[in-house]
Length: 262
Length: 290
Image (cartoon, rainbow over all chains, first blue to last red; front, top):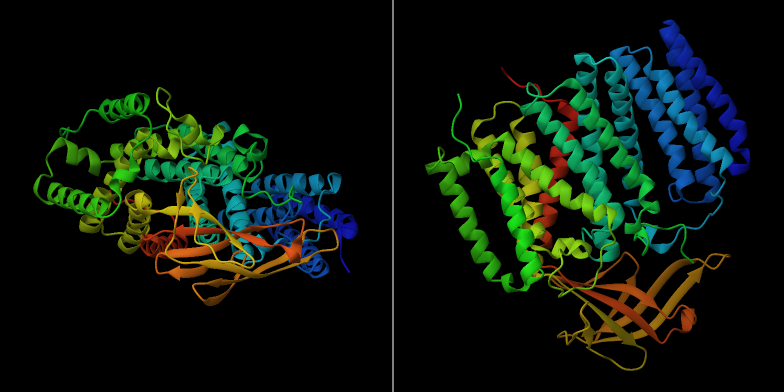
């Protein structure tokens, strides 16, 4: 049985693999970087699978559980970008981001609850959460490119960020629509302007603005403007994911809060 | 190259005007636009857009709505309002307050109605323009924009026809009394009665499954959280709550009665967006022809 108690035995080798992958990429050892990164992802996926079996439900309910998916998808997105574009720094960046979330899970074990309340027992639960987590990780890679671009504003970073934003938007769209259909089944309305939904709309609008300005207005605006917009959109995305819990808008409770009930 | 277009400040001035109306008159009177008024207005508005696009393309207003500037303004206007909503708590009960900007119930305000209409107009003109002139990724464009159009039409034009009621189904006797969010009593044309509550819990007391057996208009119905009962083509009954202290012995179940006649149009729009999203993933980033 693989539970949270075993997490550290998986996390340490996984972090080792990912770190080796990041440094190998920096040194130009492409093959080693891909193999080490992939091995880390396989071990991490094995932990998630084991946890899923042990809990008897998909590990997607608590913040700790969603952080697992985010770490995995961030590394996978980083690996895909490295393979496709060959940026030797992206793997180390994704390792740092994924590593931070793994460390948070090691240090804040508010994650042992095995229950799954009725509102979450839906066929939409797994696609909605996993697709969102994947889109977050892809947008995370676009954010890393934007950070890099802020220091060295090159066109190629924007072109790469465009590809990621388009992929991320496809998944964000699926996540948002699957969430709306699920909300109709569970709460009666497709859209409730719940704080989480409001921030999802803000995130979506910001990425839409980026896409439209990149298509129609790119000559009039500087590269730094677009990098700034990507950073802002990613900040909104973080707000949607976890920051919303600390805002006054959520003080009267959110329909999306499942960990503080009962 | 510089063709006449609407000055960029005008849409924002209209937003200010909407804020003024909000201050003076209170919330946007959405109830006045329930069916058939909303249907007639939607048809008129579509005819205006169609005529504007096909016969008055040089008009500054039409040029503005077809332009990138119009789309940017629209996203920024809607974005600004939604950001305010993101930072403030929103009330669910309707408010009749005047001499405020309605910050705590923004979706009911004149500003939100104006920004939504602006967005819909830009989207519809953009859709017509894209469909007529696009060569690259035409279907992707049509599905994403057309799907979003349909979804927002149903959300905006159909909002006056939506009705959410709360009702209590008692064990032992039937009832057909319900209340609106504004605490007004209304009487749906069907009766409901609770037969049995069935609640199972995890060892820590968290509910694992909640099911209510009801009789709605002499038909036995089983309701669960996330499994509503379609009582009519446009109305669904949801299990909302029960007497948690009594659990299986609860003598009542709280029901939510949701009427949403435009829901199928919304679903159709969302399906289009999903298909467009899939094409977005398959085809990747846009490359503009010079």
